[in-house]
Length: 76
Ligand SMILES: [Zn+2]
Image (cartoon, rainbow, N blue to C red; front, side, top):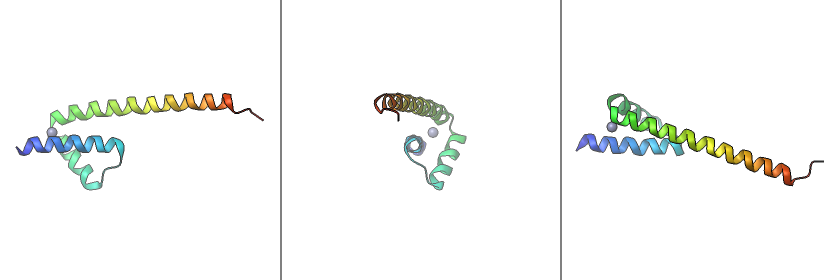
């Protein structure tokens, strides 16, 4: 089924978008699909929430690493 394939492709592009940048063509394809498909819009919102959570977790870990490093390295 064509529409099933499209949604699968949309999901692939969504997860790719979190890891790297999409090409202009992929970006246009994804946003056109999101404009037409309510299912994928919902899915995309979840993806973005997940991405946000991942990023804040990474920032949190970096903060901890930084504070530990400043603990270990003596200040001159
Ligand atoms: Zn879709």
